[in-house]
Amino acid sequence: MQERGYTMKTNESAENYLETILVLSHKLPVVRSVDIATELGFKKSSVSVAMKHLRENEHITVTDAGYIYLTDAGRAIAEMIYERHNFLAHCLTTLGVSEETAEEDACKIEHVISKESFDAIKKAWSKIEA
Image 1 (cartoon, rainbow, N blue to C red):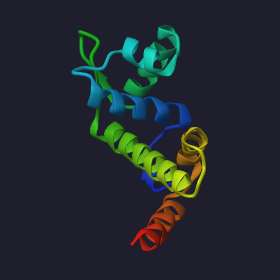
Image 2 (image 1 turned 180 degrees about the vertical axis):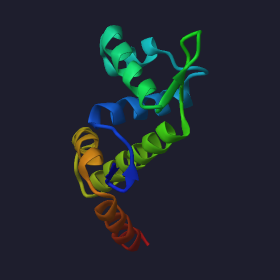
Image 3 (image 1 turned 90 degrees about the horizontal axis):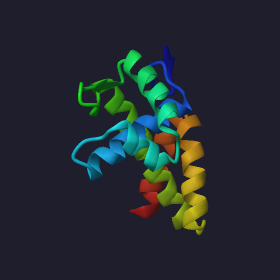
Image 4 (image 1 turned 90 degrees about the vertical axis):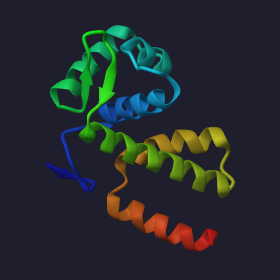
């Protein structure tokens, strides 16, 4: 199904997990369910269920040792969400919003904004910062 400019079956929760895996993969040599649970403050059992769904949707692979890797499709989603988050948080803090509020709002907006609107905001913002 085509949604927000990319083809996938996902929801906000899945996007958050994928983004978290991406961020952790930059910090850690390998990512495991326990790392995700710790990062998000979730129970390991909840994370295990989510990883099962991400694996079924072919967004991640999990090795026999329990190491989690993003597939190309999962990485594309994670990078898109991560870019949106960073860009929106930057815009909001530049406009005078506190860092804490900007982070919280970016986390909400990143999942619902259309590709068209996000691209338009990026284009307009680049003119402002030029």
